[in-house]
Image: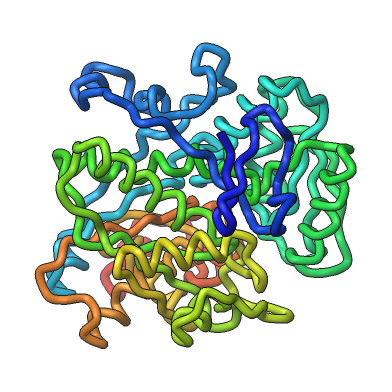
Length: 399
């Protein structure tokens, strides 16, 4: 069953619908009450489909690239510096290099169930990279709208290489999404942006895996970057479902981090309201979260408020510094948007919002090579020397 998050209106799960017909708000998939012991998952392959009983599609007909089961990495160096127990969930290890693959395996499987021929999305990069791969896997036509000149090179290459029909829109992401949504409402294609509630059913498995990694315990806090705002609400849905199932005793504080130049969720949080005011012309080096009007703002704010969580901004300089620090101190390479979570943790520790000794899990959402230009620009050029061994030794010893 599909239900409106605002007015509670209900719809059949085989109806193609993106917004409530009664009030216009966004929708969620209502999962059944499952009487399943957590021991059910033992011995299964460590991927997203390990938790198939909690997923609202037919797992026997799944469209999958073996997504999920991503690394859960302790960060002792940064954790000790900050005085917390710090972990990162490395979503860049998914098949196309970001957490979006979790949503796409569910979304594409639902598309197959519904019998649609064409799928589409608007994207800042990662969604298009993922959708194009899963559409290729399923043999579906894929149409992608990208904001002109606003997409990192690695992500653009992925969408094109997997055969998507890529259209460059003269405008920002929010304008591209509006156009794509209009096409979907006219039944020209099946929309697989995060306004599609089945996308978030895949992404909620990040929450499942976090508590599974921790021996069926909740961390004190989950911190992640917020762009279109689907992921924070999805993860909250995941941990809440496992809490309701009796698998965990406590729930984490959901903490969303946005760039200073694209922070409508933080602005709403600071005003203690559920009403999000869009940011016109959002700008940040973190292209994946360069979004001014997130479609899942209501869900995201519910997740933050209901979990006694928090929302904070970070500067581009903080993001780039955290990206480099995570790579050089912990060996984990992520794209700039992912590093926003680390930058946010540092700021919140310094401000006293995060207490010393907290167990904190950062969701790092995309791989370093998603944005190779930013990574290269953060490094010094290699030193050149002849192949003469004495010259090489001289260079290294005079470092």
